[in-house]
View (tube, rainbow, N blue to C red):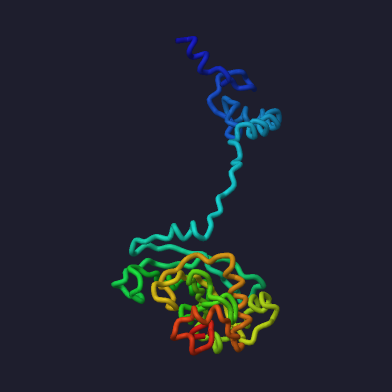
Length: 261
């Protein structure tokens, strides 16, 4: 019994008075003291050792790099259960900044019985609070981008981009969008104003009708939006490859890229 007590208390001796110690240094958790007074008295001698012990006792730093998911991997994580809330990557073109940036836009999974265009069993409803935060307004307008560039080929695999903007941007004092001006080198005909948000939608089962679902934006989408900003308001040139891909209700507009702006 006596031997066990000596083994248990070995190393727990106050370095100042050499008596049994019960208080441990909170920094290195190695040296023991019989009292706060003796710990304070011994600090000048213990300080250097304490720092070394803290470093040696610290857990090793993680060497793994955070995993970066591709857009496809992120899309696979979009929930399918009705009522689920989720976010996707979107492109924000801030009116008062020089560069676009990736932001999160929120949605809710809704049942087809609860609205939508009837083309899918579920659809994605905007979380309007995100519009208020990103655009400064819940009243928004939307335009659909179908083509990679004016008069060019459609965005691959039937995907479309959706440009969301303040509904009354022309009259509510919204500033000319500096980000768009910088991105296009000022080469725009239309005066884009206020913050702008670009979303990506997959192809629907009905050609030419934008899907009610949403996915994460991809790297190429910034270039598509740049081309759209430059081309909007100009007379688009017909492109033989894209004419055949146009839905009949768009063909009369000669490759018009947007709706409702």
